[in-house]
Image 1 (spheres, helix red, strand yellow):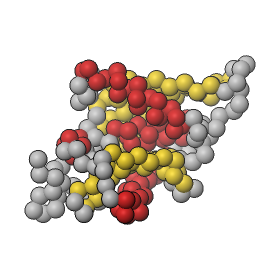
Image 2 (tube, helix red, strand yellow):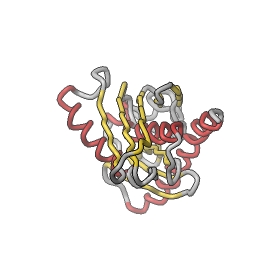
Image 3 (cartoon, helix red, strand yellow):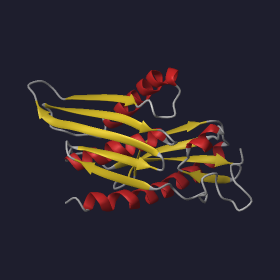
Image 4 (cartoon, rainbow, N blue to C red):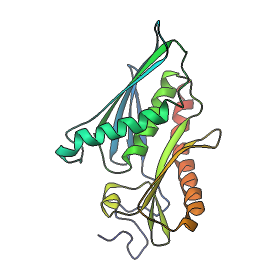
Length: 216
C-alpha cells in the first residue's frame, strides 16, 4: 500500500502532520464516548467511593466484536492494554487515601492509535468526573516513514508496519509520563521524534481542552 501519494497525502487524505477528527460525547453516569478518527472508546468511571480500607484502583477493559481486532486476539490484547493503562494511571490519579475508583473501558471500534485513544478517553473521563490527577495526560502516536513523521496513525498505516513512537504527556506540567517505540530507528532521530510527538499533542489538546472548559 502507498503510504504517501505524489501530493504527499496519506491514505486517508491527511497531511503528514494532521491529526484525525476528535469528538467527545459527555454522557450521564458519568461516562463519555471518545472518538478519534474511526477509533471509538466508551469510558465509565465510578468514584471516588469511600471505603474502610486503603486506596484501591480497579480497571476493566473489553473489546466490542465490531472492532477490527481478530477474534482470537481480543482477550490477549484487552489484557495487555488493561495492564498498560492501569500502570500509567495508578501514578496519575490522586483520589483520597481511603477510597476506591473503578474505571470501565469498552473499545467500540479500533481504527488505529488504539492505546493513545484509550489514554485520552480515560484522562478526559476522570477530569469530567472530577477525580484529581497530577495532570491531564494525553497521548499520541507518530509513525516514521523515510524522513517524514506521520501524526496519529490510522489502521491502514499501522498495517504497513511502520516504526512508530507513542508518548504520554502531561499537558500542563509539560512532563513525560511514558514513551514506547515499536520498530527500529536511528537513535539520532529520537529528539526530532519527541518534538514531533509533543507538537502532535498540542493539536490534540486544542481539540480536547475547550470541551472540558465548557462543562464548568
